Length: 116
Image (cartoon, rainbow, N blue to C red; front, side):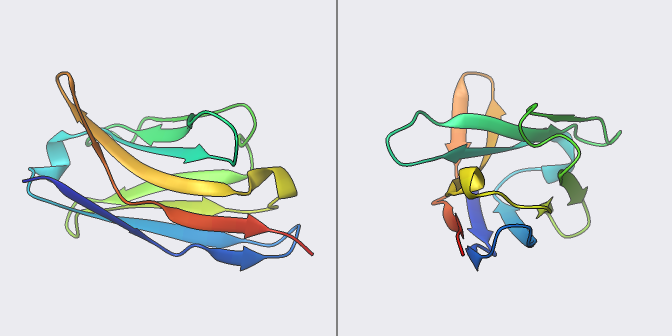
């Protein structure tokens, strides 16, 4: 059974930084691309960033490019999202995600609030 558990969310002032982490179990982690999504109140869930299984190819949404960095540690089954220069519009629940064919696996989410 695939499980994804996020941590690291919280309240931060504009311009600050947070680091989110997702621990995966129940899968051969090094063979899966990993994704971060977010969902703000009243909005649809949107793609934030992803990273390929082993060769470290990364992709970012335009809204976070240059501010967020996704990374992974295949020895620890973790994928992190370093978020810098945070803006109020980054406020959302952040979700870790991976896919296996047509199956989507999601974590429970972690709340990030950017406010002064």
